[in-house]
Image 1 (cartoon, rainbow, N blue to C red):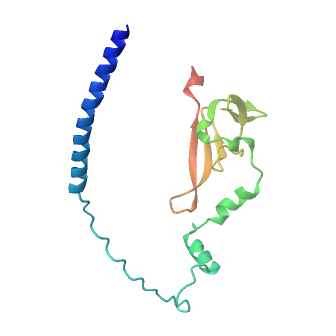
Image 2 (cartoon, rainbow, N blue to C red; image 1 turned 180 degrees about the horizontal axis):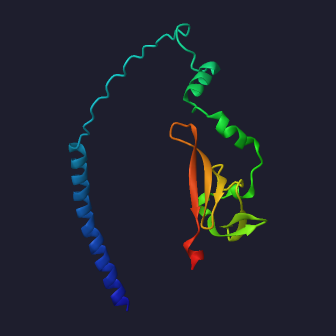
Length: 178
């Protein structure tokens, strides 16, 4: 065993001494390459001269003027047909106006107190509505109720921002006819 350890130490010493000559060659090559490689740097251009400009505010519009902002906002606001929308803004909203019209489903109709009423389903609850009730989020007032449909007059804004009336019809659902 001692012989084996001695032999192993001898081999390791030879390997390390053999590497030292290669290491000197490697160091010489690295020094040569380092000296041969010169960085190529292009000089930075000289900074341009800053010339300050005077601001003659007496001839120009003040950008922070509140009156100027008000004029611009008034020019861009849509024209409002106040006679059409004003009564809708001051009345008390009905509960079925909170739901969009596309979520309201007409499920039937019946006669109550001598008047035809429509049965509508909103959020899995059935409500009855009659002419004069409001329905949907566009100020939809029911103008007509038949056995298979109800007609609403809605007030909506057009692309120009003006309030206009449009008619909408809600038909009885096909699911309830079966």
